[in-house]
Length: 133
Image (tube, rainbow, N blue to C red; front, side):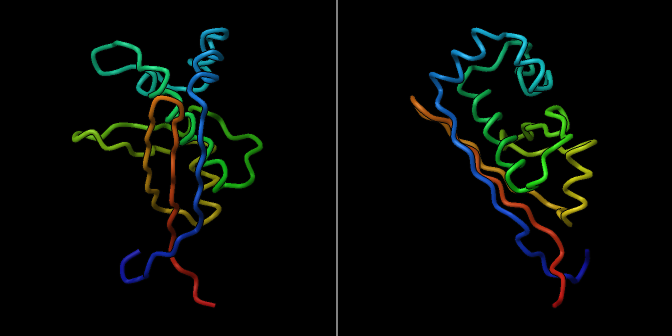
C-alpha cells in the first residue's frame, strides 16, 4: 500500500529440540511429507535436508501459527519456507494460511532461522498497513 506506513501485526518465535525432533522423524518418516513440501524437505540437487534444517523450518511454521492465533483448519503445506537465490529464507503462504494472514491484515513477513548443536529457532515478524485509530 503506497504511502501507508507498515505496522507490526504480530511476532512469533518457536524453538525445537533437535534430538527430540530427529527422533520423531526417525520413528515417523512419513511425517516429513505431511508437514513439509518437497522444496522444503530437499535441496535442489534432490538430497534430503538435515534434521536440523527441517527442525528450523518446522519452528518457522509454528511461529507463523502463533502470529495467526486461530490455527484450526490451517494446512502445513500452505506455509512454506523457501530459500531465495542468495540463501535467505523466506515464507511463501498459499491457501488456508494465506487466507488467515489476509484476514489479519498481514501483507509482509520477515523470517530468521538458526540452529546449533541442540536447538533450532525461528523468528517471524508480520507486517500490515497501519489502521488509523
